[in-house]
Image 1: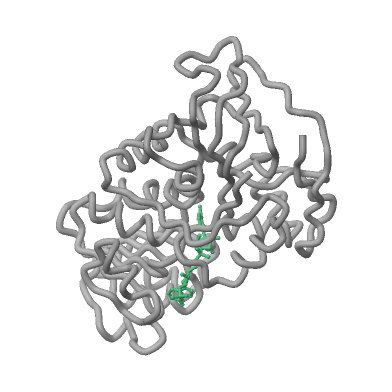
Image 2: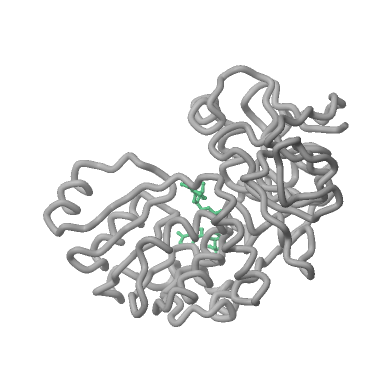
Length: 314
Ligand SMILES: NC(=O)c1ccc[n+]([C@@H]2O[C@H](COP(=O)([O-])OP(=O)(O)OC[C@H]3O[C@@H](n4cnc5c(N)ncnc54)[C@H](OP(=O)(O)O)[C@@H]3O)[C@@H](O)[C@H]2O)c1
């Protein structure tokens, strides 16, 4: 089968399309013939930096096969797997954190990291509704209650566009930031208030926010603390390293500041599958790349301007 091997961390040219053996499956695994792969900022960050390889993939031994988000068709089922058959259409985020090995024509996945795709969903939309959507779900569901004021930074990005929709299903009032070009997109997702971060200062416009979902870090995190109410919550996605000033502010005002790292979870995926099926959640796939154009997909995600999700189709 064809797969992208990363022999050395660095630029996109280090993603090498190679021919390797199809993976074997263990008794609790499923072999998936991959139809679509979604690309995340973490794919490019791990490709570029050795220290992230150890942190996210859990090894410094190369080569590795990057990628975690897939949708495809079950090609074989391990002896202990129940409830999944050859020919089923499935999707999932495989072994995150760990080595997902998703940039390949076939992927061996723990059955517990997959869910059945809703009947009418395309492989592209299913592949898109994985790492970014699980992040939004795992960040918001335990922390948001009906009527909360929730600020979603970068609402037009992969995580943000799912977070707006999930926060709405939880009954929140949602405020979200993006550039002016993506305003209508955010409003179409259900955002109650849009802030153009280039022309407006959210830190001067907002107060009494119950929860901030921060996918930017740095200055955006510092300013976010100004708008969150005492005793409110901030979820940080880019980093778990906070300055002493941030830590002091958080402790003085009893703000709950958590870094979360998304984790593979079949039950959460089934929740997403149900939301997709009943139309409460929609993936927005803004660009589809061919498998041969993986380097272009990485360049695109590294631009920081992705709207919704980008997907590689096989
Ligand atoms: N900890 C975890 O488990 C976890 C999980 C997923 C993601 N993450 C991290 O979270 C971050 C976001 O991920 P993602 O997949 O959503 O990224 P993404 O899809 O690449 O986000 C791109 C979007 O960010 C918007 N944006 C850029 N700068 C902005 C700013 N200053 N204010 C508001 N919006 C801005 C852009 O909108 P405009 O073009 O309109 O500016 C663009 O639509 C990444 O750092 C990623 O690594 C962490």
